Length: 519
Image (cartoon, rainbow, N blue to C red; front, side, top):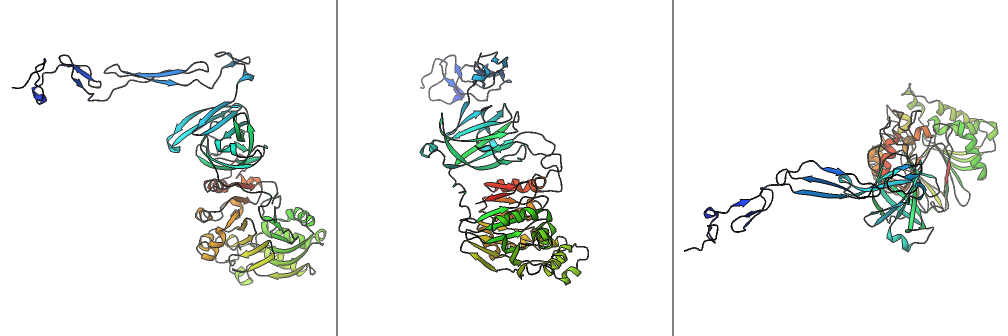
């Protein structure tokens, strides 16, 4: 005979014999009024809307919601706000004076950031799979000190690479922010970020000693009241060693007066190499660089026949003011008369202009050569120029650009790839093993066709060693700006290329209205 409980349920028997009397809602534990037996919840709570008490700069906030079935209340604390309500220089809530507001220190995993002229808070973003610093500048320029505990082992003044993800929020007419990322000396690292999308940033910063320990500094300009999100901070990638980037070879990018391409390489032994040269308007600047380096050219390489690559040479050969410049060796592969006859609508005026200039140069060009694939020119012990392809004249729609001869400058440091105006034909060339292998070793790459509408994205993705990008040409091309702002010129695809290079982890980008010198 089974022993009965006080509620009439036999111990050890099936629940069908049970006479428990439970009270409460099904979304909470229910207890038998007779014997105290506990029944677990059988359904979820059914919450009403959150009721929020906003935090202030003096007091934590709170939000709570209540189950409509059982009255269970869920509470969540909201941290003290970093925002103040200043009136006449004093916060009306906490009483702090505006000039006394300290920088705010936030922790991102093991990383710390001190904000200057800005406020921020830690949020989460499922797409970033981690913590995010929401950043809002209170002034046009706002700085960040980023700290990692590993920095304490580094000497002040040394360089440290920092990578992170950045998103600028906004709704400008052409989809690109005017925010500029600055380094510790106030120069521009990068700008022209696609709005409302995460982009990769990789910068080499200088270690400095601060109140929170060793840190690195960078800032955002043109940033007032533009929400910025930063996430995914890491460090440890080797920095780019300036001062000996090319093992003693110096690279000049000629300052542009218009759409053009012109580079000069000078070796430690004084050998001078010119790649293209630019328009006639660049002849004066080009001759100035040559004058600084002996006033002669040992080797001049042309990529193709378009005027923005060749007219500076033609101007130097035909204008008496440049008659002292002597060219020892000139290399070019232009379309023959038979090729020109097959393309009556193509402008070959620069081809005939160069032929005439050479015929009347009076011996100022000592030797001319037609460069071809596998040609190797040893300039001296520090510099070798390789020719990676033959000029191609089979493109019906893009004859001039796709006839570009690609040159590789090998140094004891980084190798440089000069793509000229190479376009669709690049996808054919990159499938050639020799061309592919030679391109992949290059850490510095001249962006094809001035960085817009040149080779394909898939071509660039094969170049997995790029650290530095060169965009020959003026700022309106670099920014794709027809006067309405960044990316306002729909025919230019430069901003797409710049986005792609960030995705590929490129460290430095050079382009715009200024010439520059890399060492």
